[in-house]
Length: 478
Image (cartoon, rainbow, N blue to C red):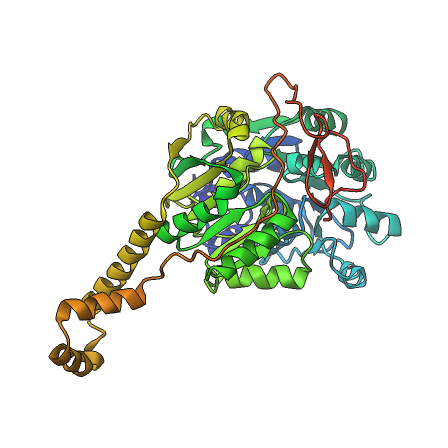
């Protein structure tokens, strides 16, 4: 179904056309007509399926730009997603003159207060900063018509569930509530039962959790072998644009520096970076100034990044659902993608839990040798040489080439040129801090014991406790 066929205002149809939207995704086609009727709705679909437009169109339709109060709120787990949603909602509301602003931690709160005084119709916010504004009375939610919980399962994982309860308790009983989540763990179901009224449920079938165009492979190896394997795969596969996922902020920093040390263009992104630094890193990656982005799950969640050809899971994610979000960065818009996951022997139960969720087995491949990596770079050099020959953009060098041919053997000349063009695998010694193995959730709900106990996994600078309602001092910043 096309957006032009929807029963929506001409202003929004014009906006979707301006944004380049033509055909609706499954979640959009099913959710928009239901949400427009004003009923509560639960939508189960992963990142990258067009959820923002699915809730954005009904929210923009319901908004009146002449009213001075906030009429719609979108709550998201990360600042990047808050910004992305605000941008898309602003585009959808462009012709209807419905304003949306982003509210998130890490940005000057006085600047946000000034933006709020300009009377936006919609706020896209992270839970912690939204609650801060509510307590300051700089945001009042007593007049809102619609509230959206976006990436609800991730907000649970990040410890925001109690904040969500407190926020919802500050909203009117007659509001419309939309909840979107890739998975529906018990605390999210309880949240829906408490705060939603007979919600309609829309579920994108599990077979669409992973994209069929993504080739999913894994490599079995020891922790100490992972970095050399990564660089050799990079040399062989020569990704146009790739994301390397690490489990912790420390890991991301170390991986980025190690890749740069071996001559790769790489930048890192995680929750401890300032917003200006995060924006700079993302801009460089989107503009192809760097080909490798090293990221944590939290930082990469909801990033508006297209044309990613490869995803490398240097570390397995803590939750199988996060794997789905990771590989969803590639294989978009009908393009093929590749996801490669590094597995240590003790992590095989976790691999199997991922395969049960995705309903797709991963294919095991071997880590390449130095010789295979070198052959990959040689092939790239030869391909570049052939491409230049086919382009015909070399005639200014013909006289120099002829001078060299008069002096040297032609095969020797080509060999020397290929030697210069080939990025030979760098073997500079690299030492990474070891990450502890994961604690694996089994389908029975019990967890494999080990380390500091069944609810913990440990890194150098903090312990992370996995639990449905745990918030504590280690809650991720929004």
